[in-house]
Amino acid sequence: MTTALDAAADTSQIAPAMLGLEAPRNYLLIIQNNAEVRASGGIPGALAVLNVDKGKLTLGAQSSATDIGITSPTLAVDPEQQQIFSSRIGRFMQDVNLTPDFPTAANTAQAMWETKTGQPVDGVISIDPVALGYILDSTGPIKLTSPELVALASSGLPTELNGTNVVSTLLSDVYAKIERPENQDIYFAGVAQEIFSSLSDGNGDAQELIKGLTRAAQEGRALVWSDLTGEQALIAKYALSGSIAGPSIAPAQFGIYFNDGTGAKMDYYVQRSVQLVKECPKDGYEQTTVRITSTNTAPADAATTLPAYVTGGGSFGVPPGSVQTNIVAYGPVQANAETARLDGQRTDFATYIHSNRPVGVMAIKLAPGESRTVEFTFGKIVQHTEPNVVVTPTVQAVKDVILPTEIPSCG
Picture 1 (cartoon, rainbow, N blue to C red):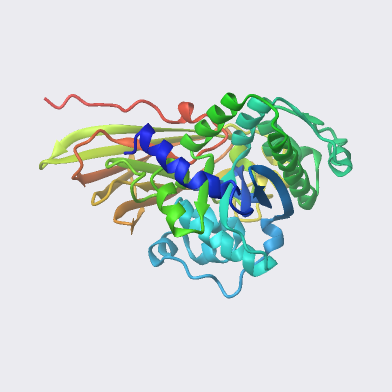
Picture 2 (cartoon, rainbow, N blue to C red):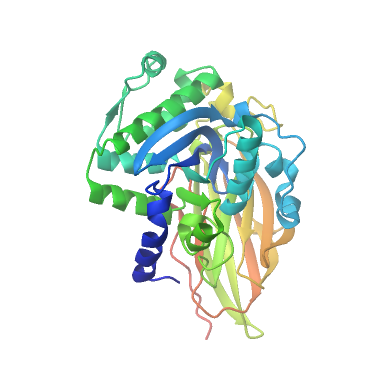
């Protein structure tokens, strides 16, 4: 793994160019919406071009995944990933990040954007509303000044956003207060523009900003991909890359990722925990079980009290108020995905391989108030280092999701 000195050296090597000090850069900015979960965070909701010129940030053309529409012909994607996540990742901007591998998602998103708009971009940057909250903690509150945003906020949304209210506003309140999805996207993108304008103006505490962005990167809430091979090779060494393979991945790393199957915004109400359970070695190999518990905290009457846009209204076969999730579990390189249990009972699950890592997939459905526990056991683990786990960043604090590893007494 890289050291602080390595990181400083790498940053000094690529930061000037990426910050537009040599020539202006344009990046596709994706704001992942955790209310409808995707493996790398959430559905790509608001899109914008982020222009960086000598360190100054401005948002240019703004759009949404809906505006991009259906990509035809479908873009070619890695066959291993297509087998796991379907060809949708090469067809719909909303689904490019069904795969947890951000370099794949970003490359695909860039191609979709350029095909649709004709505007080239130099890379892709992704953040989520929780990361926006970290930024606001450093810059201080922002006031919405755009007449269009003020008009949308008049339906009952705040006109001043801060690190405390931005997540609930963008991931819950906006759906209750703004009826039309296109106006929700406008509000979402407008808030991002105000935040980046505040950043560009130099507002706030620089040290706190660095701390917040570092935290966002460590939690997978801020991701970066460069179209330039040399830059990407350095980015790939760090969690910021969002890669599922390569130098940023610890040897005995597990990954637990979530993809929405409801077709709606119900993940705001799902509480999850992920825990590694080290098993006793078998035949000289390590064994580890990953335990994932999910709870739907939506009110019992969610079907009638939450907007149909939030519940999905049953459009995809999931009863309103219920949540369906595809759980995707990655083990370490060369291991085996051996068994799966649902609420303690052994059950069938789908198995795949991605970048020489075993993958187990299972779908669960939760009614309001319901909890279910899925366990994947991985065996034939050749790494004898301590295991660690990364998870899809959701509305929850990552520290509340990842529980301490359970270690057995093996004699």
